Length: 354
Image 1 (cartoon, rainbow, N blue to C red):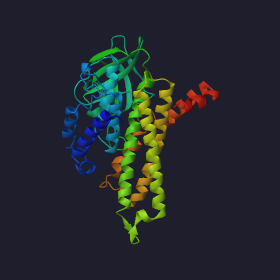
Image 2: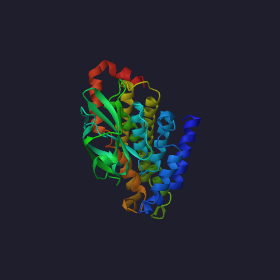
Image 3: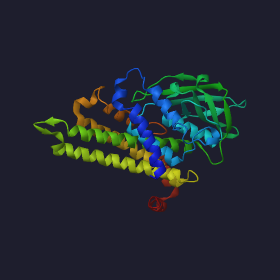
Image 4: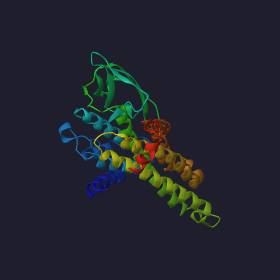
C-alpha cells in the first residue's frame, strides 16, 4: 500500500471501529447503528470513492477504494458500502452524476439480462441484488439495439421482492417493468458485462479476504483463552494444525485478492491478464471462505455456532459473498474456456507473466 492508500484505509477502519464494532452490532437487534455509520461514511466521502469530483464523488483512486473494501471485510460490514462504490464506479463509466444515498448495482449475476426498449425504458429481472431494498437508486447495465447502456434508476420505480443471503443481508429480486431511468447513456467502447462482473468479483474477493483475516484473529485469540484438560487449547497439536491451515487460507485469499485489485488499479482495459487475476481471485477466495470458515467454527466448538457470538457475522457473510458477481464454479468454467481458446502452449507464458 502507498501512504495515501494507508491513510484512506485507516480512516475507514477508524469509522468502522467506532460505529460498527461487531460485538456492538451483534447485540443491536434494531439496527440503530446503521444511520450514524452511514452518515460518517458519507461525510468521509467513502461511498462515492470511485466517482470523480465532477460527477459528485470524492475522486479516490481504484487502489484507495479497494483498501476500503478490505477494511470493510475485516468488520463484516452489513451496509451497502461496497455496492454503492460499485454503482458509482459503473455510473462514472458513462459520466453519469451519482446521487446521494445508498445505491446498488444490477445485474449482480452473469446470467441475468436487462434490456433497453425503443422508448428508453428498462425491462427485465435481476436476482440476488445485494441491499436493493435499502438502496435509493440502482445503477444498471442493460442491453439495447444500439449496444450496452448504463442507467441510473430510482429503486422505488422497480418491484423489489425481498430476500436474504446466508449472512442475513438483503439479496433481493428486482423487476424492471418499462421503468423510466433518471439518466441513461451509452456504455463506453470496450466496456461489457464481463468488466462489471470482474470488478464486482474482486470487490467480493477483498471482502472475503478481510473476513478471513478477522476469523483467524478471533480464532487465535479464543484458542489462547479457552482451557480444556487444564491447559489452553492452543497447546494441542490438532488445534495448532488447524490454525496453521486457517492462516494459510487467509494468506492465500489475501494474496489473490490484492493481486487482482492491483491488476485492475493499474490496467488500461479489462484484458486477459486482468481476467486471469480477477477470476482466479474469486475462485481462490471462495474456496478459502468455505475451508477457513469451517476451521474457525471447529476451533470455537459449540459456542461459535451461537447467535450471540460474533464469528457467524464473518463466516456466513464470507460464504454469501461467494455467490455475488459469479460463483467460483462459474469463473472456473470461464477461466477454463479462456485457457482452452489460447491453447496449451500459451498457458505457462500467461501464468508466468503475472
